[in-house]
Amino acid sequence: MPHLPRRPHPVVRQRRRRSTGLLTAAVVGALTAGLVAVAGPQLTATTTPAPGAQPQAADAAPATPADTCAPRVAALSVRDRLAQRLMVGVDASDPAGATAIVRGSRVGGVFLGGNATALLQQNRLDALQKASPTPLAVAVDEEGGRVQRIDELDGDVPSAREMAASRTPEQVTATARERAGQLRARGVTWNLAPSVDVSDQPASSVIGDRSFSNDPDTVTRYAAAWAEGQQAGGVYGVLKHFPGHGHSSGDSHKGSVSTPSLQELWASDLKPYAALVGPGKPLDGRVGVMLGHLDVPGLTSDVPSSIDPAAYRLLRTDYGFDGLAMTDDLGAMKAITDRFGLAEATTRALAAGADVALSSNVTPVAPLLDAAEKALADGRITAAGNDTAVARVLEAKGLCRRG
Image (cartoon, rainbow, N blue to C red; front, side, top):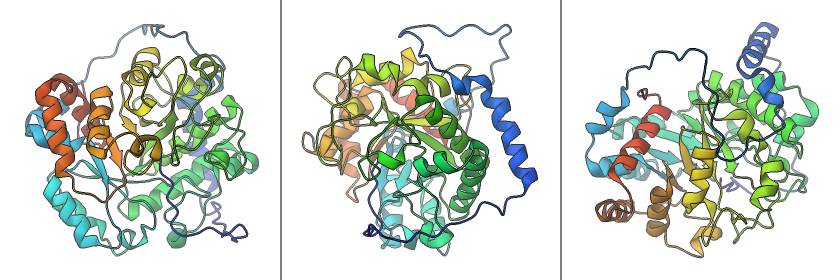
């Protein structure tokens, strides 16, 4: 996910610490109990199922709930269905312009990067919601540490690595719940976090201290703790950066990135996904997954994972994930922009299997929709696949439930 700085971060910047001690012991205890009940022993899983392995059938299948998403999808025009699959950047310093983008494009979501402070005060996001005929997903990447959007408004949260070193999972759950409540109160509905990258990179490197640990089991426990608290606070979370950015050779903001081979990722970087998402796993159906712009030997071919169908097949088939899958930023990261224009990258992502194509750019949306409509007419994007993706988006926004 793009981690555009709100402002320069001096090396010796003194950070404020916002205590989570305001939450009572009873609340923390309740959250802890909930985490254990939901996650159970699966949070310490250390093995990844073989690719293609089928989930075990439950002893008694529950009744299938009615599909309330299909009618909502059918009620949208073709162009509006495609628009639901776009999340675009808006300029926080220009609330009127942001509202005009939403009204004119009918996009499914907006991303607030950089210094988002102006839009996060005085209920300014209400105008964006009122401008959208379908409730809008309003997203930030609030990870803590280097990647924060509301620390100037609501106080600081430590980095993932610092939290794992100094706090219990139960304390991280409480911190995430408090932070999610603050985000929700300001109009944010999605947080593109936590990072589940497994990494021992230096703190200031591209992943670095954004990773909880270089140990997959530690990452799994703490990412689950953050995700549980975030959901309890009313914010939809997204795990990132699939299939694993933590041991990469470079920074996708600056250029192409290579990871270890797929075989090596199975042994480490992919373990948190195997433990957390898919049938019967503790976060199944409750979080999204973001795909990074990664060249993975043994998986991708001539394009990064975010726009390669093979990466989506890995997530859907090998891990059984049926929730929302989205791209990392297609508009401001050179791993993509050095190779494709935004319209082509967006179309490739939607055709490859992304439910949501993310771009942080403040740019006209009509060309993106024009290109996607042409791809739908040409068969690069299938009508059935498009409808399924829109249903996932609407479900992630809490508007319906798929049967």
